[in-house]
Image (tube, rainbow, N blue to C red; front, side, top):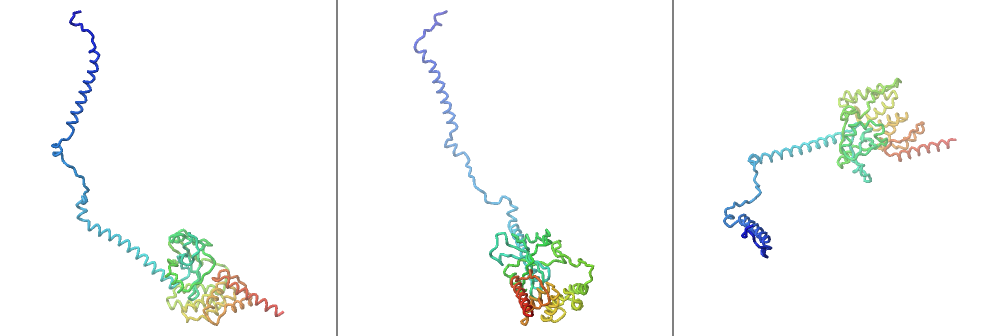
Length: 357
């Protein structure tokens, strides 16, 4: 081996690897600083760079909306006014309908009653009830309330739609008497929300009044046919001739002793239909029907008797007892008072009977 190729080992050889590592680290640091200097913006670059300012554009970007904005606003206002007007018109028509029905009540009229106006001590779910005109005696209207309460008014319409009125116990048996003026006051106070009248015997496509004309009987009853004819003529009572024929038929039925015909004749005198209004003559025919133990006649007599000064209900009950009529007054408006009067009449009759013996 040549001598020149041989190099002796000395202490400086120990520092060579460390120097190489330091040189590599220095070169890497310099390269990073160079890149940073290139990336850093200078004053000249900052002046040339565009400035972006973000703002919210409040203008409508669609020119069609800008052009027709007024028309759109007017159209929306017209639609809102139309809807509000239709609702107001509907409420107005229903109010007129209610006032017209209350002013001239008829049998089987239906009233939507808000019982919160009438009574205070009700449960939270007890708000609305249905009422039905059961009888009309002169100016006094007898109604029966439904056995059920409803939470909302529209549920009364659903009761008609789902044929709940056909249930046997839907209406209570207890009778409540109101004058027409009292019913009108109930409308003004909001107690009667709505009044409806069936067309024939139907409401909303459902039968709400049972048709009693189809109830036939093979037993001949004097005066029944004449009374039925009078009721048919009475449907056209606005015609004077028809009303007069109804009066004649009721008189024939009453003379034959048919109790319902006597009550209908008394009703003609009460209302002054085809005849002068006469409460005394009405009481005469009601008493004749009552002596046959006909409950509607007895109840009507009690109502009419209160309108005549010379009439006393106690004397009427005494006469019923003497003739052997014994009827339980469970459907009277004032049940307790009527029962007490009737009980007193029975007691007086029993006492007078003891004195005879």
